[in-house]
Length: 628
Image (cartoon, rainbow, N blue to C red; front, side, top):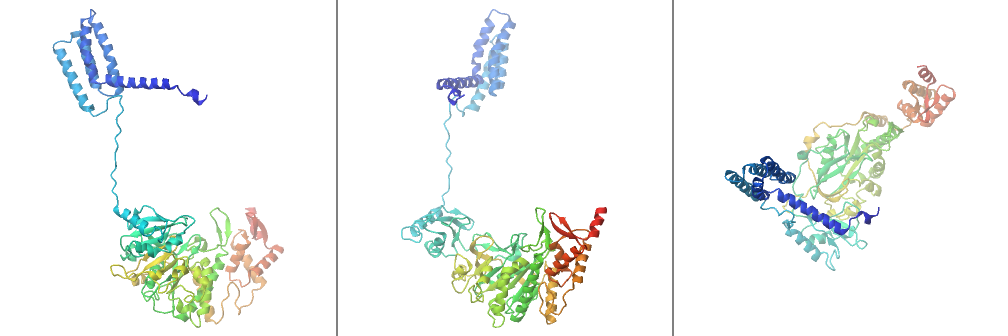
């Protein structure tokens, strides 16, 4: 059936609407006490009719049934309807005179008055009430209008710094007001807005610390976020001890607050990438050492991180000297410690590349690309957090400088895989300070923090939107701006922040460390130190120069012993090599593989199928399991 045939004609619809409206009005009128005005003449008529009184009562009951039913349908004045029906029935038999008439009139007046008082403000049934318009009183913030006016007149007008750009209506935040600056797409970029931060502050007659520009968090290169602060939100000193932050399960730690009082974080590690490096630069008295103390305190209180302090100057952090897991003071000791850990980290990388584990899908895997501190597959191996204080003292050293730069540049690329994170501290991020290594600076920018610097250029070198050399040395109240910095890291904001500082670092330093260097790593440390003490160079994964090469019988015996220990479980090639090397066999993997093939040829080891791949087991163990 078509749409036109299903619809009723217009005239029929109108008649239906009128009929429904009439029924509604009729029911509402019959449900009021005023309908009982007809009861008096009706009772008189029934009384004088020449019929039997019983017939008159039946006629009265029939007449009263209609108003009573309407009252029940409308759910109103039911008491009045019942009273009127009872009075009509009695009056039709006894007559509407005397006391009966007075009772009926009095009841009608009482119920009518009550009805009128209850419904005098309601609209008449059947009429549409006039809609009531409610106007909400909204308080207009005059500061918003002032901000918009200043922006349009001093920044967006023709010939001004932000010509043709728009400012969205500023919204009130805890620290002040915030709005977006929108450029014309295709004509201007976010960097063009950021480049005139000084002129924006000048237009509002304030400083760049109170008129803050930063890129928007979403991908739109034609916009920037503008925040106008009402005061120095970062002038208040916030203590580490008051907040008691810790390194969280995802590797982040609360280290301070951004200018809008949102928490700022440092990423010690991530589950997707392992340990993360970082760099902190700043002039003297800008707060570098105090910032590093906060990082070391966080690592000291974590059971997944061990701390190694390298201080070429020897006196930068007296509260922590000797209180970290390992500590080296002076250029010579720092170089020796750096060589030790460069070798140990390579051993850790080789170990992680061979460990067997099972992924979330239940598939057996071999080797991991990086270490997440505390990983149970790696035996709970801890991450190692390296802090290199006053790095230029070592990187520019006449004797050790070139070798130290090479090791750190290599470590910045590879130590992360073995669970090592580097935090380098310098006064400036230029190439001279970092020994001329572009690679080193680039690898350390995962956590980039720039306090007040002495020379410009740190913004470009560290990927920051503002020049930290322009940071003021004091707040408006005269207090020092120590810890005030630009941070670019895990929060995906390159914005102004201030560090949390420990009130008494020595109180935390004297506490026992929550974590420790794991046993396997300590074994490698002791192995390196023993080799140096004996005057020989430790080698990674091979035999020492003063040791004889393992004979084929030794390698074969180690393979048989590993398979016996597995008690009938077949091992894949990677697993077998890993267990044989753990037995201190001084043969390379190629030799182990060659001897394994000879054992298979001789029938002393059988190849079997395991999960669709090739594995190895002892024949007697296989036969024993078949009997069982």
